[in-house]
Length: 297
Ligand SMILES: [Zn+2]
Image 1 (cartoon, rainbow, N blue to C red):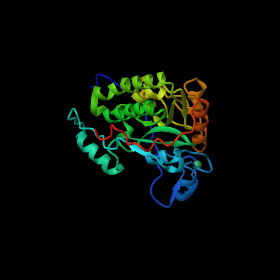
Image 2: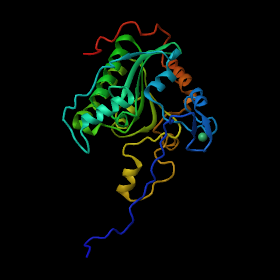
Image 3: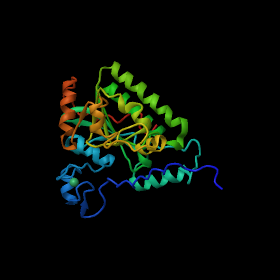
Image 4: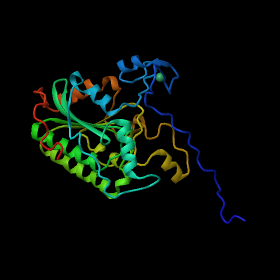
């Protein structure tokens, strides 16, 4: 005899369709089922030409889409996590790191690059979802803080393009500390009177949303991006109710004052440049010459 019975059926969530452009010559848009030639998708920055569905970009594709001539100088490429807790869940964290490094060619879930956007000097941190869900660990925190300090030294704007499931659980409290660390660095940037634009892409959740992603002087988001603290699945399982359509999506959040702008990816670069000019940035020499003194430390 069962002592406890589940009165209600558990919520069944359909397996999420992957948003990344798959390998191959043709790709089917998950929104409108149009078959698109992959090379055409490159021209539209991975936006469906028919329904404007935004496929997820890799960190490198993101930087290419933003910087002039698709050129930037990478900062702190060598920083890598040393698995401080020797953490193991279903498999060792060290093995996850090794697998992600092999799959993405990156050392951690973010690329920081310096260059110009319509001539304006900027340093951009772009997250790589393919690396343990774009999770924020000590490396991401450190790279962002160094990027902000570089921006203060050389009078550049800071852009952070978030694409992350949140804090990296395998680094425990150390990953949570990055929230305070990056936020404190942004406060110094603010005192230096330099702009910080936060760009939220699908998905931006957890500790990233709860800290620097929401601290932008202007907060921009791509259309239909999932933005929240806890994900909809967790909320549904906690309150045992179905959430309204469009909950935690950009268009839902801008109506409630969480965001400043929802911008189509094809308009993102000119919009960013306009905002930076409005905030007083002037065209300058690309901040490319000197290598970051902190690199490889
Ligand atoms: Zn489509």
